[in-house]
Image 1: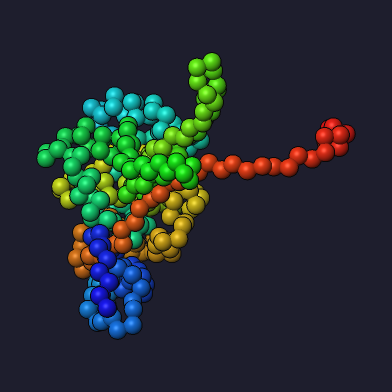
Image 2: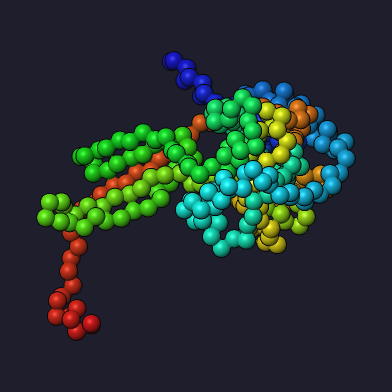
Length: 299
């Protein structure tokens, strides 16, 4: 019997020192361990990472956020005026600020290094301040997708590697003398801005992990962001499955973005690739009518 081909993984970087042992081993090996797997290397790496973390000094909370450069103000006004931005931050007290990348508290356990490589293509070799602003706070969010039209099944399927693909709108086109009644859906991407939230004297990176990793790789230490403050932990975005727990984020030595670049606290991980699918299907079926007289009486 032919062996099943090994799955092709995406490369990632995980903050294993802050994880539980099962979480770290699963990430380093691309999934839950199977009977017969040799986990000695992963366990040893995890043990050394947790030991390194225990020897780290407590990290003082850094809640500084600075004003962005004046040269970028005109561009930021353009960002704030886009429908995507106003929709994303409606009802939120926000401002544009400049933050130190390394000191941002990270509730995300890992980054996808292959995605970082893709993002890097959008940065010039020597990015200027405006280039960085456009990279962190874009005005457009194109999504690459393939489309499959199945006439027999009366369905349309959109497939993308982008996890932020979504239905952005729908509508009905009224019928006219020369056109039949029609209906349509808009497919787009969820807007993704570098977003930082101050909570309990900590600056938590809510969104933009891969963009900031790409900047940090280039030696860039500060970034513009959308900045907000809250007293509700749920508003930070961290109170969801798959992220570091609140007690870890609020501990004397929380995970920070700089730790992704510390080989004693982080490790390469294997990420199973996935596709994001949206399928729109038309269905036709009869619906029995209630008795007309009875319906009239009830009205």
